Image 1 (cartoon, helix red, strand yellow):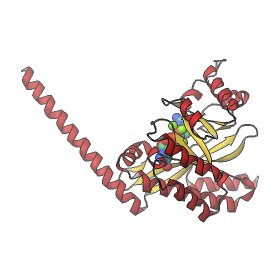
Image 2: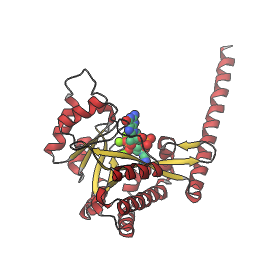
Image 3: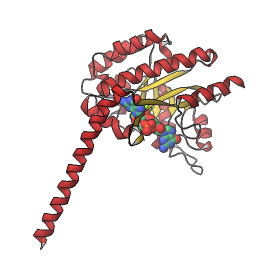
Length: 281
Ligand code: C2E
Ligand code: MG
Ligand code: MG
Ligand code: MG
């Protein structure tokens, strides 16, 4: 009996695995077509300066308008894109799209001096063409280099640190700003800080979450902000959802914040409305 049950379980398991493999395969086929069919789109989450509550810029966040499954978030397809190498053409598209969108907003609202943040995968950082692609996008769109911020994450270890460092130094020499995303969640946060030419720290939202209404001491976030100040880096808090978090972050000397308290990621049309409203007041 036990053997029979075991046998059945095995059967079910392998069917599940088969389904998973099919799922993956159709996702991969879909991803390849998505580039040609222009199914990706960028949403933009506003980032605010805490000292004066002014809009500072946007983080570009990719979405996939899937033909049958609706709007897919990056967690659904970026890991597979990274695995298959499709992140290279996708990432190149993101850089171009974000620079063009910023160019458009800067032309329409020149007094805003907005910046745009673009997330990079490690795979892009390791690719020899990255610097050319970024510099070409800047030249073509004529946006000032300091308005482009590249976000790199420490969540995956970098295999060739010297090569990555050289690429980042080259980009930085042109005036591009470099952000360390999800700070505090990786294995090697402090190694990254000392080894890579970072300008801005983005404190991961799990630390911002520790700021509650009743808790008076926020040692971890306090320490991260102090560390950033000591290293002369600017600090952005991610995932800010409550007004008391804004108050506390401002008191701690955090420079910028983004999160649902301020705004969800917005479509292009919503950004146009936001900027037009700002301009009108
Ligand atoms: P991330 O770069 O850390 O982006 C912040 C994520 O937090 C976004 O999720 C955003 O929608 C979400 N978020 C913003 N405010 C709040 C908040 O107040 N509360 C909570 N709970 N979440 C908030 P999203 O858009 O699903 O993106 C997830 C991740 O996918 C990003 O994390 C980034 O690592 C990656 N990603 C997004 N776009 C790209 C891209 O163009 N290229 C690459 N390589 N990765 C991307
Ligand atoms: Mg990011
Ligand atoms: Mg982040
Ligand atoms: Mg994150």
